[in-house]
Every structure is written in structure tokens, then in C-alpha cells.
Length: 284
Image 1 (tube, rainbow, N blue to C red):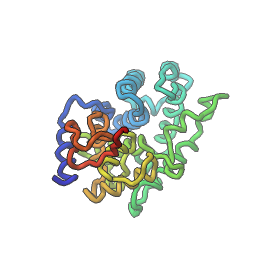
Image 2 (cartoon, helix red, strand yellow; image 1 turned 90 degrees about the vertical axis):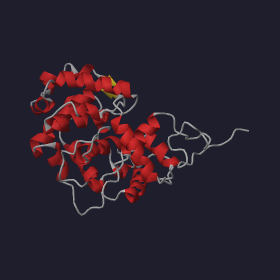
Image 3 (cartoon, one colour; image 1 turned 30 degrees about the vertical axis):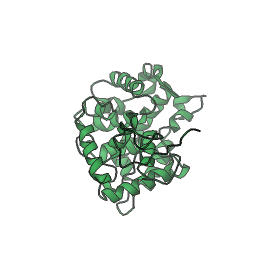
Image 4 (tube, rainbow, N blue to C red; image 1 turned 45 degrees about the vertical axis):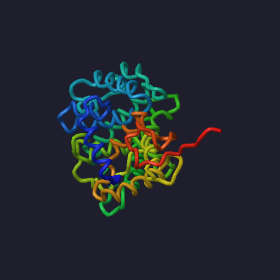
């Protein structure tokens, strides 16, 4: 069986598995596209570390934002609405960082009407992919005044939400948000209609990097923007119009911890058995 056929089988299996934990399902709880956009950005922004941990933080934030997160952001006033949010914490992200992010999102909406319109200001349909659009998105987002939120504190925390390809970052969480917004299937919502799915870049994390190395989808050894592009180019050969369609599958294959990565190729638990080439080294 070819890699594409094998991944298609696994993709269908994962999409039907109701036990799979993923932050995208928090976005599915809302029906209004404006709410989905806001919930999607916060859910993707916090999607790092242990799944159970960041889902708890996302759920706590959603409770504070109420039934319409988009309306909450549009009227958000740090002086009035930040008291509960500042108590949240997820690994190195502090509550004050989430307050700054919420203020930036409000300013985006005030300026452009929506996060989609803000992104589209730098998106070019003739570009090969979204690299330049993501670069501009992060630069313009951080140029929106938010220093007053931190006062005398350093504002480094909010920078984590807006990485840049030019700095070598894999931009996993921004690409994850784009995947949810642009693609449309049983997992992704597809509410952004003017961005071409063919131009998306794979949301690169440890799991995707590990499985991609096993499948020889990349020549790079460490996660970076170069690796994300390399994996996407390999996946583009499987489906030029939708190269990141297998991201959900690759990520959850890695999360299962049953992959044959760094184990013997004959590993009977590996769902990619017969396709992958794990970097196994025998101990002396």
C-alpha cells in the first residue's frame, strides 16, 4: 500500500474516533463563525504541552468569555474585564499575556472587521504559500498598542503568540489556526473562504516532526520553518490542492506513542509498519 493510501485509511480512522482529544473540538462547540474564529485563535494559541493541561486552560477562559466569545472580545476592556483572566496560567503563558492577546485581537477586529480580514491584508493569491502573509500578520499584530497592559512588566509573553517564519520558528500554532479556518472536512471548519488550502503550511510540532522523519518526508533533523516547508512540499506531492490534510493524522499518530520511531522496524505496534524507516540504533 502506498503512503497516501495508508494515510487515507488512518485519516478516516482518526476522524471517526470520538475519543481523540484535540483543541479543534472546542471550536466546534460554537456555531457562529465570528465565535469560531475567536475560540479557534485562543485554542490554537494555547495548544502546547500536555493536552489535558491546555484544554483545562481553554475551558476556563471560555467560561469567563461567556456564550459569545466574539462579543466579549469586541467589548473587552482590560481595566474592567481582566480580573479573572489574570489568574489563569499555562506553563510559561501567564494570565496577563492572555489579557494582552485579547486586547490585540480586539484591535484587529476594530481595524479590519475580523481576524480573517486582518490576515487577508497581506495575503496574496499568487504567492506560493502563506509565508509572507504569516510574517506580516505577526508584525502587524504586535505593532498594535498593548504595552499599557503590562505596565512596567516585560511584554515578552505575548510575543509567543505571534512567531515569524523569518526568525526560523515553525509557527505551529498559527498554522494550526489557519488549518482549522481554511480547510473543511470532518475536523476543520473551513469558514475562511478566500485563502487557498493549497498554500497552507503543516503545523509543525514534535509529533509531526517525528513521524515525518520516519516516513522520510523531510531531510531536516530539528523543528524549524525550513522543516515545516520541507514536510509540506513532500505532502504536496500526495495532494497538491490540500497538502496539510494529513496533519491531524500525523500529529495523533505521534501522540499515540505507538509509532516505531527509534524502535526496530519490525515493531508490531507501529501503525506505519512497512512504510516508515525509524532511526533505530542497537545498543552495544
